[in-house]
Each structure stands twice: as C-alpha cells, then as structure tokens.
Length: 195
DNA sequence: AATTTGCCCAACCGCAGACTC
DNA sequence: GGAGTCTGCGGTTGGGCAAAT
Image 1 (cartoon, chains in turn orange, blue, brown):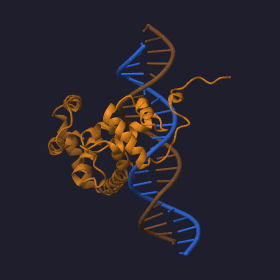
Image 2 (spheres, chains in turn green, cyan, red):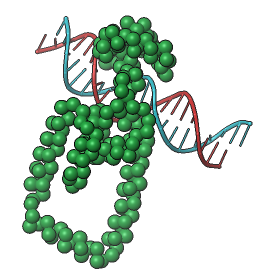
Image 3 (cartoon, chains in turn orange, purple, red):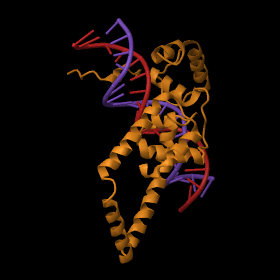
Image 4 (cartoon, protein in one colour):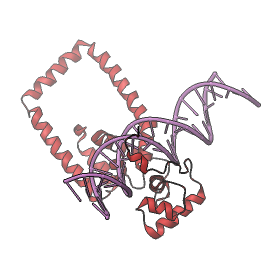
C-alpha cells in the first residue's frame, strides 16, 4: 500500500549531507551574489551542489551571510537573550532579530547548552532559600502583610491588562527592523516586574 | 596512552504557513 | 478554491573535541 505523500518528499533525499566544504561555500556564495538569497532549490541547482535547497538556505543564514558575528557572546548580549526569552519564550528567530549578527541557531544552541543550565541552577538556589525562609515564622507574617497590602490597590486583572498592552506594543515594534542593542537593554530594564 | 564522558555547535528533520499556478 | 511547492521555524541529532578517569 502506498504511503501518503509527505512534505519530506520535496527534500533531496539522496543529496549530500554533513559538513560543508569551503569549495561548496564558495560556489553557494557566488550563486547567491548573482541570484540573491531566494529560490533555494534553484540556487542549489545553479551552484551545481548536491545539496537540497533547505541545506543551502541554512548554510547561508547561519554561516555565509555577511555581518555574521561568531562566538563570544558578550555579557550584554547574554543578558538581553535572557530577558527576551522570558518575554518571548523559544521564539529564537525573533530573539535573534534583536541581536545584530547573531543567528537563531546560535542563540538556540547557546541557550540549550549554557543558559538553560544557569537558570536551573538559579531556580534551585531560590527554591532552597524559599524553603529555609518559609521555616522562619517572622517571614510568614511579613509575607501575609505584603499580600494584604496589595488587596486595596489595582486588581490582578488590571495589572494583566496593563502588561498585555505593553507587551503587544513591544511585539509590534519587532516588525520595524532591528533595534539598537543598548536601547533594547534599557527598554527591558525599565520595568523588571514585566517578567 | 587509551578510553570514557560531557559539551558545543553545525546540520538535519518535520511541521506549518505562505506562495504560485 | 485547491493542489503542489517553497520558505521559515523550532526541535533534535550526531560528530568533533577537550577534559576527566
């Protein structure tokens, strides 16, 4: 019985896989220079590469594209990634769009290999602290007072609406091209309670 | 010196939405 | 409008390398 066609059949199944050679890079870059970075299937064919279009696109975006920064993610960039991830979740391409020269793949890798561990460590630390503080009756009284104090202020729903509004505005601004790194950091620092 | 382990990163895969005819 | 195709995205895999044993 024939299996239902899947999108995967559009991939060049018998194509070359694995690491790219500098010769392949050169061919790809040459074709993109004349045809532009689109119609990837055509680009692969024009370059005479035994690669599928997808593979060519990925190679271009993650490695050959001009102005790519490689390695050494700065503290400022790391901080920005952490904040943006809190805001956007695993929207790597959006996050990468705010970090000039960085690719979504690089940020995803950086997150998975380093930042996610850092965060887990922090969470464990704060859980440990919470546990110890909650065993102290003085802290429980202070916590109860703090909750009572909030009851007279703005409602939770109002707070949520405010946050949603700001977040929507922020996300809208994402469609308007890359922003200055420093500006972005300052913007995210404006209201830590967001996160 | 040989082997194992863990980490990093490039590349692949499948899916969903956009586009084209 | 619908089928076929392309593009972009996020998740996952696997090879290379260095550190640990």
